[in-house]
Length: 104
Image (cartoon, helix red, strand yellow):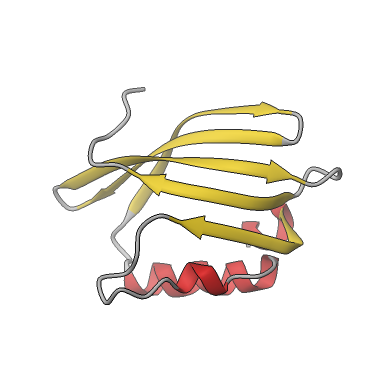
């Protein structure tokens, strides 16, 4: 699992959007193992969602990635902003989605 390889032990993620019931399960993620479990649950609940990377940029301790998401006829884009540890592991992510896709 990629989350276990690239995330730090104190990894955190912040999502702008909530689940349909108003909950924010991403807020409870702390560490690589916790994030791996979160991703497993997400994939179980949303098996037809496909994310694709559009472009990324890394500047030392910080990075950005534009992505698109497709599920059925619904498509949207988003951006993730990363902070890295000195060892290059992902320490923190802010993830926001929009209402249209990015152009590649």
